[in-house]
Structure formats: structure tokens, C-alpha cells
Image (cartoon, rainbow, N blue to C red; front, side, top):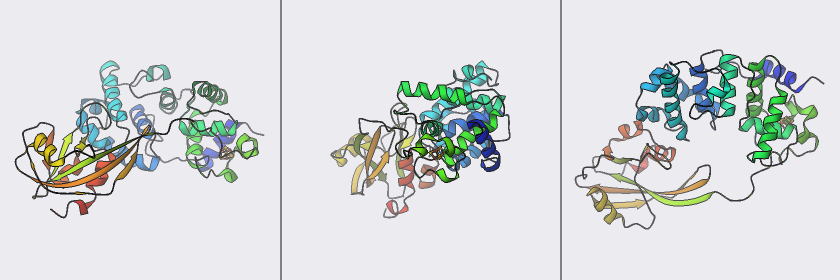
Length: 348
Ligand code: SF4
């Protein structure tokens, strides 16, 4: 039987993806940008963000020189905002410490904020033709199934085994095609649910397939369920249709983004609104809670639409904005979704 890598390379040539916007280039900036955006986000979502980013920040120097708030605006909706903070910091590092030229060795790339071992390897392969192994979430799943590796892949011992395997499977040549093949087959064939084993080029020696354990591998994390947090987001509206947004602190979830103010479910809203912003509550309606999942937490958010009046107490972190202005801000995903629901804003 042909080797793992030669089957993967042959499959990628015939059935893999060849025309993504960040392919067919050796531009390390474009490749790095795409790799950061693709961490935990699917290709179809990333394409639009990637193109808008490049229009506004065509070079690493342009990105480094941009204010963080502008970078966050462009990132808004992609989620995992720490990646945007790291992106900006890494651009500044490349611009200032490396004269705007990305280092070509995986070890040097890993010194950049937000660039882990797998991302560094992908950049080194695609931008510089280096020989390095990737091991993102999709590749972990594929290798764990194909080689029948037990144990949750996030555990250090299991991760070590998977890295050793990823290194051992590397072909001597055609590294770019092989690496893209791993990414494509992980995203399109050996998917988390309903993998397409019938059309998989690796099926003949796949342990999980042979043992009918495809849905058992990789082993799931045992132990704690995600923490649950319940709170309200206050959609404070003036009669002129303007809505209040607050800049969040540069720490915690949604750091540096604009959001509806947050409060606890049992807060006295009239008191709170007067104390924090000097405004008077006229009417309020609680809407059904929405659920938003983060990696280790599940947020149960009750939107409360409240009509207020009065002069906003001077506060650098809060502003009344028109809906089009508010929708332009760097927003967490749940806030963006709520702002998109016109029925919340039509009754004022
Ligand atoms: S045969 Fe199925 S489980 Fe095995 S690698 Fe292919 S898609 Fe994944």
C-alpha cells in the first residue's frame, strides 16, 4: 500500500482546496494572517474577514501602525478576541524587531504572540518551504482515529505521542501539498461528526474505521462541565433611537470591545441606571435569554430593553450611538446579534 503521505498528497492534488485567497503565495504576512484567523474558525467564515483585513492593512507595517481599536473593529464577529490582541502585538514585533520581515524558522516564529507550534509550522511550510509538522485540532482528530490513539488529545502525554507521530509521518518532499492535504482532509472528510470514511483515501489502514470506533476517537475530555454564568445585557434606548454602548475594560471576556452594559439578573435597574449614568428609567422589557458558549463557560444572557431619558453623566467609556454607528463598532458576537434584531429597537 502507498504510504500515508503519498496517499494524502495524491488526494490533495485531485480533491483538495487550491484556490483559497491565502494559497498560491509565499507572502508570509498573508499566510500568517490566514493561519491566525483559521485558529478555531472555519474557512468559509474567515474568507470575508481576511479580504477586508488585507484591504485595510495591506502590509504588516500597516497593521502594526493601526490603533488596536481599529484592528478589533475588523475582527469583530470572528470571536476569540485574544487572537486579535495577539495579532496586533505580533505585527508590531515583526515591524519593529525584524524590520517588517517574518522570521523563517518555526522556532523564531513561535516567539511571536499568538503563534504556537502548529501555526509556526504551517507558516514555515507555506511561506518558506520548510519541513515542519502541523498538529491543529483537525489533524489531532485525524491522527488519533487513523492510528487508534487513546486518551484525550489535550493531555500532555497524548499530545506528545501525536506530535511524535506527526513528525514521523512527514514526507521528504511536497511538504506544502502534504500539509494542505492534512488540513483539507481534516476539515472535509475526517470531520468531527459524520466523517466521510467511504471516500477517505486513508481508510484501508485506519484503526478507528477497522475497529468501528470512529465515533469513540479521539477520546473526549472527562470531568468538568463548562461553568454557567447568568447575567443581563442592558439595551438602553433613548427616544431618538440611540442606544448606549460601553467600552469594556482591557481584561476579562470581550476585553477592549464595545458592549451593552452588563448587570446581574436581580439588580434594581432604576437605581442602577440612575447611579451609573444619571439617567431615568421610563420602561423596560426583559426578552428571552440567549445562550452563548465560550471554551470553558456557557453564558446565559437575558437582554433587557429599557427606555431611558435624561442627560448622560460624562463618562469616557459610555456613549449613545445611532444603530448604524453602533453596528460599526468592535462588538462581541452576542451583542452584534442583539443589535441585528430590529424588533428590539422599533418600539421607541
Ligand atoms: S477512514 Fe474515516 S475515521 Fe479513518 S481517517 Fe478516514 S475519515 Fe477518518
